[in-house]
Amino acid sequence: MLFSSRLGRCIAWVVFFALFLPVFGLPLFMVGAASVAGQWNGVLPSHLTTQHLADAVQKRAGEELVTSLVTGLVASVVALTLGTWAALAVRRLRRRGRRIAGTLFMLPIAVPSVSVGLGLLVAFSRPPLLLNGTPYIVLIAHVVLVTAFAYGSVSAGLARLPAHYEQVAASLGGRPGYVLRRVTLPLITPSLVAAAGLCFALSMGELGATIMVYPPDWVTLPVGIFALTDRGSVFDGAALTVLLLGVTIAVLLVVSRIRTRASFR
Amino acid sequence: MSSAALSIDVPRAEARERGAPRWAWVILPLLVLVVIFFYPLFFIVKQSLAGDAGPLTLAHYATVLSSGVFKAALGRTVEIAALSTVGCLVLGFVLALIVAFVPFPGSRVIGGFIDTILAFPSFLIALSFTFLYGSAGAFNFLLMDLLHTTEPPIDFVYTKWGVILAEVTFYTPFVMRPLLAAFSQLDNALIEVASSLGARPLRIIRQIIFPEAVPALLAGGSLCLLLTLNEFGIVLFIGAKGVITLPMVIYGKAIQEFDYTAGCVVAVVNIALSIALYSLYRFVLARSGGGRAVFV
Image 1 (spheres, rainbow over the protein chains, first blue to last red):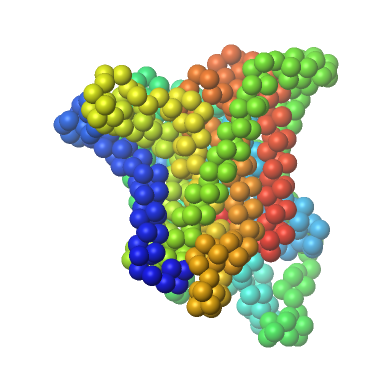
Image 2 (spheres, chains in turn blue, cyan; image 1 turned 30 degrees about the horizontal axis):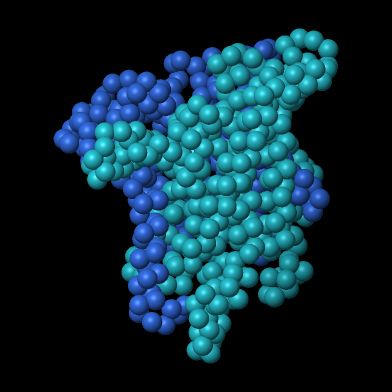
């Protein structure tokens, strides 16, 4: 016990909540309050309305939600496949190759998202890959940004995996494809599920690269939220943000349920 | 030990494959990475040197790097990143200390909450600051009522301090995660013994807890520095006129002024800075025994 006296502990807790609530709690609360604010001319909204939230799912914003969901889903699936493939392949390399390839796959994390967007804009505005103006450039941007996280997460899972499970399976005559399907992948399922959740959440909130490359017919939620708040419709922006957070949290909850179940197997 | 014995007796899984060499499988993902990541990166460098179509020259660098906009943005970016990182380290250390060593009912919920914040978009914090500290925000109304004035008394959101406070809020969990992992490995008996021998809490923190926390602080701090250096959403949403960082310059040049060449020059500088910091982060992480990283 760091503090033996009850008073000391109480002071520590007061300090904690005096820091934690204003810094983390208030911002979340305020966005929530703003999303249902009819009028806000005081410390708190003077009357509440569900109009902004209703608009958020019905009007143009509804399309943006679908766009974000499709982008997030496609990007996560592609990134998870690529990242898992890369992590499995890199694990089979020898020391030096493993280090070099690992660094290459992690490198997109070190590049600012706005620069990733700019690079795609410059490179894909000319033949042979003329993708500027299509939704594909947004999808590619998201895949670039989240694949590194999928790779990192799956690699970490593989590193914790004791080698002898696969060796025993192979020595008993399991072909590599069979060992991969029946031993390796089931054992790293918790990492895969966690990586999928992380990829989806990151993609849903991605702004820097998307705002550089998005075509007018493929507006994701964060870009839409910025457009709204930039125009001064802050309450509508807050409603959309709440929607974005709600969907993200729902997916993360589902993921953590699956993950717990997978790790009990 | 048993696994070491097994790996000698059992033929290695890879040895069973005859056909493809072991590096063959890495080619496909590497190829995709080259097309969607390195190919665009190459074009950023090319455009920064050659412009839209021209011979290779350093002239674009000379023009952009000597401009006042770039210099101011570089200074502001480093300043904001450094101050935010210090803020995250201090706040993260204090909060993690209490969660780990003065546990209270519900402190596990806090851990889950921290993990969730990591998955949120950063602009959320900037948006909330509008409602909290903006000119028509809750705090200003509260203070106007208390002080009986009609002028909003606080106005720091639209300065660098607003950006720094928002970044501290958003990135503190990135420091807390490795800290909590490090604290969970600290032997509690050390603290019990020190405490029973009469050491006061501050001394225990200074002499026992802090030395254990240094690797996690270094790793979390360098990750914070990297992420705050590249932060875009918070700066964009706060939208303060005087607070222009490197990612904002890239966005402004390329999207608002259609000047891809200048954008690419700034991007090259930003990427170089960022990769240098990332190398530092990996180095620190490797030195500290790879203590659990946030993502990587």
